[in-house]
Image 1 (cartoon, rainbow, N blue to C red):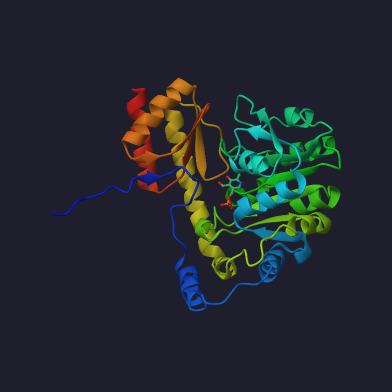
Image 2 (cartoon, rainbow, N blue to C red; image 1 turned 45 degrees about the vertical axis):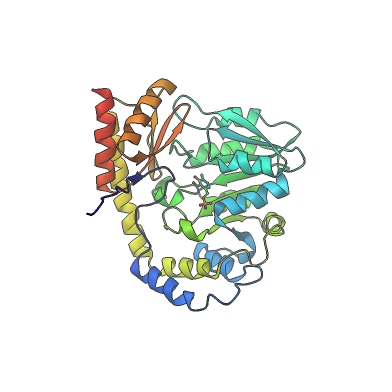
Amino acid sequence: MTTLVSAGHRLQLNEIPFGPPPSVRDALSRALASANRYPEFLPQRLPRLIAQRLGCGPERIVVGAGATGVIMHIVQEFGSGGAEVVMATPTFDGFPILTTMAGGRPVPVPLTGTGRQDLTALAAAVTERTRLVVVCSPHNPTGTLVPPAEFEAFLQDIPASITVVLDEAYVDFVAEADRADIFALLDKRPNLLVLRTFSKAYGLAALRVGYAIGDAELIDRVARWQLPFGMTALAEVAVRACYEAEAEIQARIAVLAEHRDRLTTGLRELGLCVPDSYANFSYLTLPAADAEVVATALAGADIHVKTYPTGIRITVGDRSATDAVLAAVRSTVQ
Ligand SMILES: Cc1ncc(COP(=O)(O)O)c(C=O)c1O
């Protein structure tokens, strides 16, 4: 007798629903033959590759084990010894967790009622003990974008002695016209670090590749915390192969944008409040008691999402995932 086990819908970590394109898989398979060899002592080729792609010098890039790894090194350098790290709440869990691990103190600043980071309140939360301020665009968990002009004005309010992190983990899902010109910002503001990852749009979450872009001096301070042999050789192979498969990656991003818009529209048609998302997830803004009801219905349908005190974050999956989410949520509102 065959037992059918439902895999459910894994929509809680903002992963994309696609495995690597065939050419990337092939490159990874070939690289496995050299798994007996160590990677570089400290990564040189990978930052060079990314820098070449972005059109900047390699001294302006530091890589890490996912953006999480880079955040760890940033808080080790700037957030230790009781230093205050100002950030929105909720935000990507890594920021408060890693700040605390590094001996810093997270200073949480609530989002606005529309799910946006409150830039005025973030700037006002800065004290003489603040060493780091974090802004995410698009924001996790709400998917909202910080308009580039607002971010630039915000940077002017932050003293040059404080490092500002702009986390762009989801930037590849943002239309070019809506993106910040990070190199123009970096030229004016050497206290800025921009974070990116290959875990999201590039679908390499298992391989742990992220990086920061910044002024060479700041990047050097972050790089000092890198673990010897800490980046796998597969990371470099996969990034190179992804860059060569860019057309395929972009086509998938377009498909996910369609699914996201369908999910957002479907949820709004059920009368729910969903901010415009620029990432690969949608956020249902709900009071805690209602969120509990919806989360229970989703769990009952084997749909795994992430809940917050102010709502539920649902990763965009494939068409069947969207259908399943809409059906489960519909069952709670009718
Ligand atoms: C805003 C944000 N930053 C950083 C990360 C870390 O990503 P990774 O460590 O996989 O690169 C995430 C992951 O969900 C995220 O949402």
